[in-house]
Image (tube, rainbow over all chains, first blue to last red):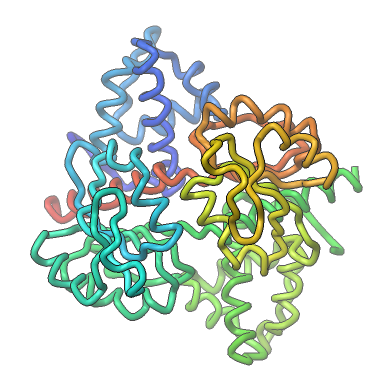
Length: 216
Length: 216
């Protein structure tokens, strides 16, 4: 990576979408694309595309557009997708199963090395080839295997209990599905997926559309 | 709702978090809270709290703070949570199971009335008390039961096939887990949960922290 500046959360959130669309273009053997075409696929404006990509040094060429393969590789690089990222999955309930079986993650470099739960009925069962281990073995496992990412598909109360310990053990990235708005040290990355919040956002939008219809 | 103006996507996304924190305060029998305290719980600034809530007409009182019960009720109202929202869940794989078993959604008013899949091995099995039905019966079911929300836990290709039909059948809100960046009519609400994008965002943040450490 030649240059890097602090970019906004909104841009960061769009990068994976660029990457996804560029992957699809590559699969379709499309060599180059204009900012207009790319914007139209993504339902954003062409100037948004140009602005976003300028954050990372451009990549586009006037009159030619973007070289799909190069842009795909560059964004993958920016996203840090070239390397293997070792993960533990904590929580082997329904959501844990869904995450563990999600082949797409592994394609992006996220490799689940261990699955942990505290439910005796689940411990020692197999998910996607991995045996579910007891949470008692979590910390030594993280240390021994130098795991960097923890995927948390357990309730907030359980997260509270173990969050400090897993960070101390070496976890640098947390993908959190619990309803805990946690604070983590500055050198730890945190991304929350709050499904219930997302569903409430949908309710809000539904409500707004209803309201606008009645008051137009 | 007495007043309503177009609010930004970022504010809309924070509303469910306010609601969640206020629910927790209510459960803890806390009657009132200052914008400072609320902000600190949510890891945002007090001025952000005041700005956000001003979008909806304030609710706070100088020197007193917010009445927790009232604010909770108002935000619930803004989010449209008072009513029952009838849903169909399309896709009964791992993720579908996780969604169907998520009690939190029902507490918020989201009631799954039917579950659909096209896999013969899953059809007629039961999830959380509901029998999985064939996708062939989906459209008449939506129409007959006046379902307003579709939860899509199926692959993008399958979403493409049925999206127009379910909207024509009366769906007004879509909670989409597939990797399809779809376009919907203006009177249909769409909220995407792109898990793989979210995980790539985590990779980006990890990478950024690494980079800053090396270059400080």
